[in-house]
Image 1: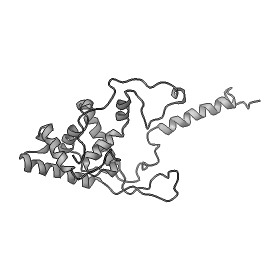
Image 2 (image 1 turned 90 degrees about the vertical axis):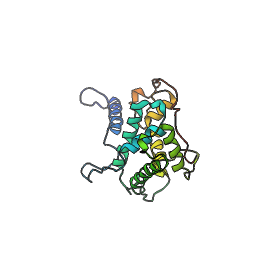
Image 3 (image 1 turned 30 degrees about the horizontal axis):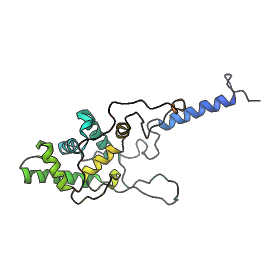
Length: 217
């Protein structure tokens, strides 16, 4: 015999409803434990934004994104850089009990690499990196990443160059996964329990194939 809950629902229905609310709360913005609480530290504005980064995004991100998609990918990368907390304690994963910390701030090095692309553009083409053609920018990026090796994109924090970091950040985004599968799979987001078995909705296009020069080539 089930115990009655105020309002006429039985215990099983109550627990089912509570589980849905918990799942929804876990997906709500601001519930990520890795993010600092509001007011615990001042907002940080990175020095990575600017015309060079915009031009770099137009050069290395897939052309299938279109101008709005490229702009959104760049904005998301800048927002991630602004929100990054250097040497923050990592979330404890399975298999280890020791305390681990995130790397130091990568933005200063990436900003210096953007400045390096600008200097390289001035020396090779006697013009600003942002004003060059896509083809000329690709050549300069290939020159700048010649020493960056690897057969796959690393995590952004492990990237040896800002061009690789920008590509890696987008490639790990829900938008990239949706485009690769040709459906709204929306990774890193939670579904409500009632939607768990529903087939993802299709999207136009099936892959995110575009202009992405390989680092070190």
